[in-house]
Image (cartoon, rainbow, N blue to C red; front, side, top):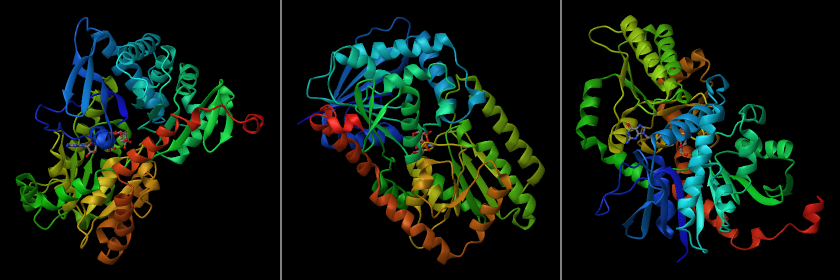
Length: 473
Ligand code: GDG
């Protein structure tokens, strides 16, 4: 059986005995990818330690082997908290004003990619295919090629790829564009992302389009295509159906009494538009005073990246916004916004999605957004809720029947909340059904299979040089 090597910043090593770790989006996706391969998952252990060794720790768990390395405090600061999360993340999400570029962070990012490549290269066999995940590892293929690896190497970018002028504002953009072309296959979430990256390679790197998404960049051939990521539909649906017996879900529903529920679930991140959404909910109550006391908004927002200053600032901003809105609108018998920062088990989320008449998913920009998909899948087929979805989430392309909104316009979002709350069951069903069907067809398995089938081609056909006609074109 051919081996698949997956590389990502963090690795979720299951406990002994096969018990899976908390199933985040990437862990579910990787598990799916390994369903038809034996293989290896390589990346950071999550541990920061003085003087880490370059030698990875190997852990065997059945057909998948895990290889993890620690980071030094300097690596963590420069590679992870610095360049990846303070320069690449904001720029990729069109937030130029928040981008904090530093040469030392960039050199740390390059150094960690080089160290990862050296450690990984020793573990790779000539027949392996390699699938690298996300913006922490843009230069990894280039480093691996430098060490002589000729294996097919694919890359999946989980976040948006911005327009050329935005990306090129990053001082290291030229290096990164050159490096990314060392991947055989580059997967992005949506077609506009594909157009942004392809256009940039053509204009900035003089790449030559070869048709079918393939480009010739500096004598190397790469292919760029969209592969919208899906979710584990069966697993999620089952969790939502069974969640009625869960204590937290039961008590939350009982506490609502006859109130309708609005729900938001997001990592604490400025890309997710949490304070902006709260302002929109406040506008909704301001223009619909009869709804005060009849609607509750639960926002579940586990903290993330607290080591990055912009996230600390955001945590304060959200706390203040919640306090102001609850203080000015609430009364002793009713709290408009219930804001929690702890993470809940997936079955609880599934049950709360199902109980919510409205799912509020209003990121300012998002690669895909799995919460939107989870909300749809968790609904009851007899009485589904309504999804209010930002048009700047990649998911909007597969969920056009949702109420699509501009998250920068709080009045538009407030109006959509009103429309959702008053929508007839007939219209809710009409909108929900095609979305649920599409989510079932285009699930995480469909996504992983499509990417890997295409990556497999690079073992043979795609590696051949372009024909004379293609080159001339
Ligand atoms: C990146 C891209 C892209 C949230 N709170 C809890 C919890 N979650 C889960 C959700 C969902 C996942 O985390 C978040 O996924 P998103 O897609 O919404 O966002 P990112 O984390 O930013 O992911 C994004 C994704 O990669 C995949 O390619 O869609 O655009 O930014 O699954 O349910 N899970 C649990 N407790 C919580 O409190 N268990």
